[in-house]
Amino acid sequence: MVRCIPGYREHSDSMQDKQKVTFYLPPDLHRQLKIRAAVDLEPMSAIAEKALQFYLEHSEVVEEAANAHGSTFRVYHCPDCTSPVVLKHGELASLRHQPNVLQDDANLTVEPTPTTATTSDEELVPC
Image (cartoon, rainbow, N blue to C red; front, side, top):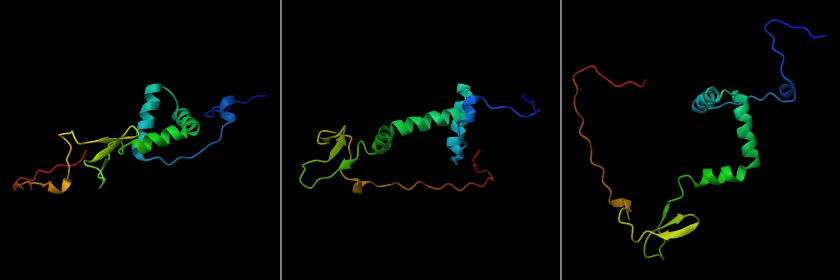
C-alpha cells in the first residue's frame, strides 16, 4: 500500500541509492553553481556530482591545470645564462630577442597620483 502525504515528494529510485553530503562553498562559487543549474535546467546536486566524478577520474589533469596557471611564463634569471629564460611548454626559452620583456624590475618607478580635494559630499560606494 502506498500513501500520499501532502507536501511530501517521494524520491525516485536513483535518489534512494545516494548519500546526502553537505558542502560549504564560497559565495561566488555557489552563485556560479546556481546560475549553471538554472541555465542547464539541471539540479545543482547533479552538476556537483558530475564535477566530483570528473575530478576523481582525472585529478592529475585538474592538478596540472591548476599548477600551470600563473607559472607558464615565469621568468628565471640564471647566473650562468646570458639572458633570462622562461619555462614554456616544459622547455626553457630564451628572452634575449624579446623587446617587450623587462630585464630588471628594480628600475621601475611609480609616479604618485595627485590627490584632488573635493568639497562635495559625494563618495563611491560598492553596489
